[in-house]
Amino acid sequence: MTQIERRLHLIQELLKEQPRYEGMGIPEDEDGQKCLLRSLLNIRMPHPASQEFLAVQDAYLREETRRKGITDLADLHPVQEGIYLWQGDITTLRCDAIVNAANSQMLGCFVPCHGCIDNAIHTFSGVQLRLACAELMREQGHEEETGKAKITPAFNLPCRYVLHTVGPIVGGLLTKKDRDLLASSYRSCLELAEQKHINSIAFCCISTGEFHFPNEKAAEIAIQTVNEYRERTNSKMEVIFNVFKKTDLNIYRKLLGANAKAETGNGDR
Image (cartoon, rainbow, N blue to C red; front, side):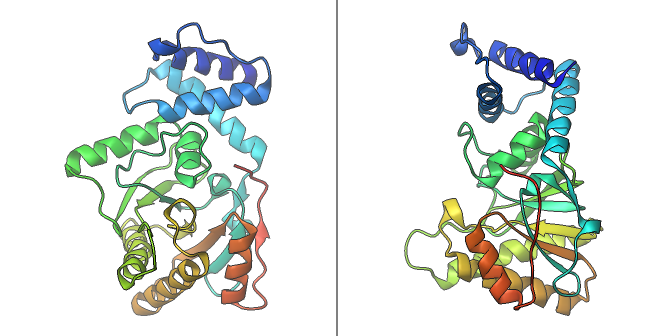
């Protein structure tokens, strides 16, 4: 199958699962097809898919990521010992684990083509990720607590694992509880990664954006928590601070030192 044939096959199969969309036309242009496919993946509930579907989906998603350009941690240069600053699409980063800023349901973002990192990670990992998260939630029996972390395979992403953490939602003035919960999210991810013998982890800007945590304060907490953990445990785990927006890039550059130059990936969500 060509990439176009894969995309059309996936769209047709996903439309069959949604009787309410019977008769929906498929756009002829590439961008329209990609948007429709992503939307259908976003709204799909966590239930098993056929082996045929998974084979086509996996081939399609891996080729899409390859075309965006994969960045390997081995090609990056640390800004401090064991610390990296990288600007780009986290779904194109090859390291041991990346961190997803999840919501308390832990099932990914259901809003079609939403711009959040949760949506991007679930989209390009594939339908297996939502299914794996749903199984974790069934076993747990309740929604995920803020400041905790879970781990799943990364499926079609270049990394090996995804760590999912629910950061605090800031609804007004920033409180000590908000700050403590954000620190707990970073610490929980590091501790879980250490337990799983993960050697490198990439953090997104947890709780900023949709959860409205002030960007600069969030970056301060992220760096402080990582440094304190590394000092307390003598951890040799490599940590990548991944930023997507220029605002966050400038903040992390300032906090990590004047010589902290971020390397840039090719990805674009």
